Length: 369
Image (cartoon, rainbow, N blue to C red; front, side, top):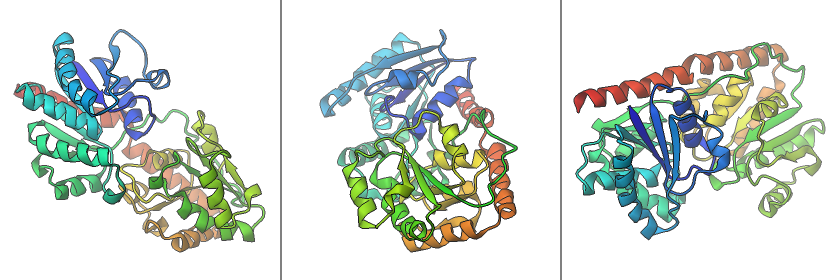
C-alpha cells in the first residue's frame, strides 16, 4: 500500500507533524509519500527513519493562488506514485485534498486529519477560518475524518462537519526515554511549561498565576521551553514586568531539542493554554513521571484524568491555587501522582496501538474499493 500524507506545513514541529512522523515510523510495511503544501524542513525530515519507502515533496505554496493550484499538483502526484489512499493533516491540507476529490471525481479513499480544537474560534486567523469552512464543504467526499481529540469531534460536528464521518483516534507516542524509576524531590523547586510563543498557549495565565507564588518563595523557579520564548521576546518580557514576576526566577529556554532533559529538570508541569486539541506536551510530561496541572482545553482533562488538577482556562487565580496545592503536597503524594500519570499514558497512548487503529481504518477502506 502506498499512502500519500498531505500536510499543510512540514517545516513546523507541532502535534500533527510529530504524529505523522510517529505513524510513518511505525508502518514500515507500507510506502509513504509525504507531501507538504508549503515546505518540508530538514529538521522535520530527520524525525522520520530514512529509507527507500519514504519520499518527500514540497509544493512551496505561499498564497491563495498557489494553494489552489496545489489541487492539480496533488492530482499529478497521486498518479505518479500510484497512491492507494490519502491521509491529510490539518485544515488547509484537508481543504485542498477535498477539493481534489471533488474536482477530479476521484474514488481514492481520503482520510482528513483534524489536530485542532475550536475552543477559541474567534481567535483563529482568517485563512484558518476559510480552510475550516472549505473543509466542511467537501467533508462528505472523505472516507473518514480522524480527530485526535474527543472534544474536537463534538466541536466540528456542531460546526457542520458530518457526524457519520467523524472518528476519534488519539495521538500516539514513542515512549523511549521515560524514567520508570524517577524519584520525586523532597520539595518542589522548578515549575515547567512548554509550548511555542502563541496566544493559544496563554503564558499570561501562567505568569499571572505563578508570580505571587514566586514572590513568596525565592527558591521556586519557572522554566519555559518553546519557540520564541526567549530573552529577545519584548512582549513576554513586558508581561513578566506587568505581573511583577521575579525575573531572576524565570528561565526562558527558547526551543529545546532535548525535551527529555527538560522534563528531568523540572518538578511539576503546568499546561496553561486557552485552547488545545490533544496536547502532546502534557502526554510527554506525564510519561516522564511528573505531577501535572492543566487547564480544561481540548482533551487535556481526558489525558490527565485527575479532575482535581484541572482548572478552567484563563483563570489565573484558580491556577495559582492549584499550583500552591501541589507544592504543599509531600513528596510521597507527588510520587504516587507522578507514577499514576506515567502508567496512564504508557498504557493508553503508545504509538504501536494507535498505529494499528489507523491501519485498521485504511485496510477497511481498501477492502471497500
